[in-house]
Image 1 (cartoon, rainbow, N blue to C red):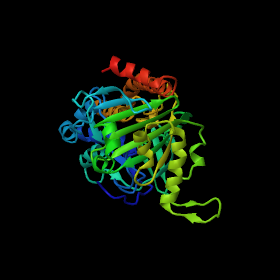
Image 2: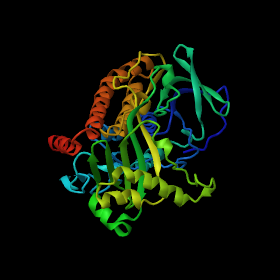
Image 3: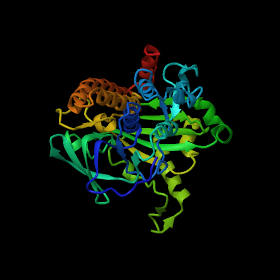
Image 4: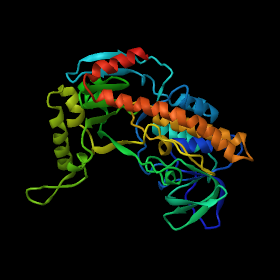
Length: 400
């Protein structure tokens, strides 16, 4: 891993990856396995600049296949969270309506931060340019592109890979599509040292994932590897609803106009959220009321289910840049890993003809993305529609 050095206008890379998320790193790693160098540009200042999210279930046919292609399968097995595949489905009264035990199936759980660390550590020193925020890109003709950075530097590349997430700066080269709000808003919260400090809530949510649902709302949790419970409070809401709640670390007392303490601002936000869960079990409400630290609001966006583009010389997309979807099929990270591995494998198979590689990659990418995005959209619809607990139990029992 490297720190970001200044980049000069004369810099040229045969292959440039924009974004050091899971998909971009998988692409760079599989290229490296095949003896091909790629330059990765990442806006974050360092690997630890911001939290990377919680637990991921890594699917055999996608995420695990990618890690095998990357030569990292054994390292992946070493970070699996034992018991993390356990699942509980509850109604709002706290009654368990369905439970799968912690036995390991083909979708083991890992911490996203651990998985990203494995990928980062597998790359040669200097592969990643940290603190390199891409502001735009333009075609130069013949498949070449010029990419501009926030510090004024530019570089050119023969193969430009947009792995830069939901609000990709590379996507406009290929597609006019932009992510749209799905109608679901999340607020994330944590209970630290849950087994000892929040025993009743910890016992209710179990050792893996928990889904508590009622029409138009849900409380979804994961037990993390550090013993904390990570909670997603989900509500069907207008796009501007979250902006009406003060989630900042300091707030203002609307009566006096004076600043109020962090904990007070957070307490007010908690009370506002809890008004939507007044008839829910106290152990579920405690996941909000007793949360440690700040609450984090998040709007859930998605690209169109059928998002695709015409083959455009010298550039392609992977992961959320290509097929941002809601998290309700558990496919986002898995597809990003598989995209990165398949793209890199195709480039390695056509070293003198990147266009053939990009064509082959996209031929598989589009139908795969369409299937998963459709499943994700369908799951969102029923999980926040009428009778969601019964429908989720039916889904889980029909796809064990």
